Each structure stands twice: as structure tokens, then as C-alpha cells.
Amino acid sequence: MPLHKGPQHDERPMSVNPFLGAANPVGDMTAAPPRHRLPDTPIAPRRRISSCTTN
Image (cartoon, rainbow, N blue to C red; front, side, top):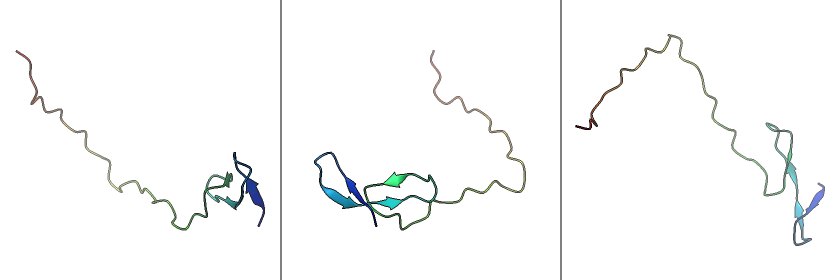
């Protein structure tokens, strides 16, 4: 595994983030990001509730 020289010139293990394709010098990514799915039905428009009215 290649080593990354940080700002203090210390060598830390470097891992590659497969989602961004960039080097991540902090650590290896163990958890995958959540997958956001679109609903099967179209989303109904939300009505704006005017609870904060100024008189």
C-alpha cells in the first residue's frame, strides 16, 4: 500500500475511495454510503403551512 506524506511529513497509509476515485489519506472506507431510491409514485406537492404570520 502506498504511503501518503501529510503536512507534517509523516507517512500514513493511503486508501482509495472507490466512489470518488480520489486518494483518502484519513483511513479506509468501510461503510458504503446510503443508496437513495426514488419512490415508485410521484411525490405530491406539499402545501405550505403559514403558521408563522406577522401582523
